[in-house]
Length: 341
Image 1 (cartoon, one colour):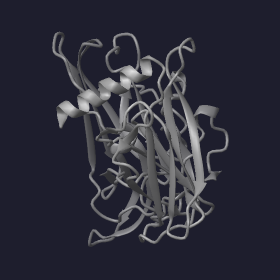
Image 2: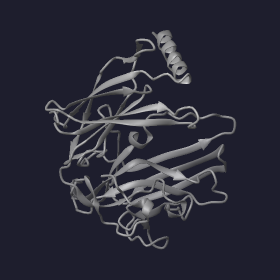
Image 3: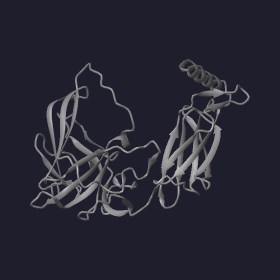
Image 4: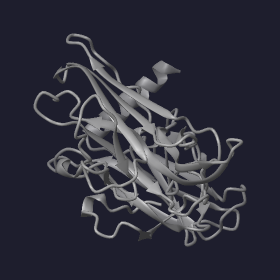
């Protein structure tokens, strides 16, 4: 089977090189809601890719095959394409969802008409309903300008960060409440290939903390990445992330979907009764991982932390379904404005 797939891929490359058409793929999208019921009338479609024609440069051209799902939530589309096909679905009242298919096992036919196998596989995607989006404090830090990142003013000591102010606490910023406590410990920071730095995150109150969460994307990546509500228990009071490298030692990435694999729920400003039960607290979420920048260049630059966060300001309200039109931060730089729920 492996040899067969290698031969098929070589044939595809050869046909492309001499200008022959790519094989045709046909895929059926089945769109359902979170209970598994079909969603009729959803806008669904395939994005097909093909290498640019000779003389047009590198890269690929894309074509869009759109349609509406029927009463069973089904839409089928086809076209000539490379072996990676992007899929999407959307409908008013739901969060958009995207997926892909690249599990073709081979190609049948020859020259005149060639098609991918399996022919017409069904890919199920889940549309999440918009239930109760609320106003929140939300900041997009990834991809912003370096000067806008929260730069740690000190090394080797905890410094408080106020997430309602989006700033360090006084005297290092304008914040007044140490929701997150960040510390950077440096064993060595010589270069990008020679460093040993640790980022630690702790919290001000007993009961505060993080819960790591990885979304299930087997039925598509939803615009609403995390669940509608944060958990009420299970929060860890400390987070540590180590950045280390030794010259001559190669480190490999684990791959995956970095922007989806690691996310967090958090709770801050927790209040407990005499029995240690939670009587108050603020809930939120972090999209993506918590990262440290400039960790290898601390002899010339300050480190900075990066985390996209959303905070519901209502006490004991676990709802973390954000309304992008109701951001409680009003004057964020363009790159820090949040468009995702």
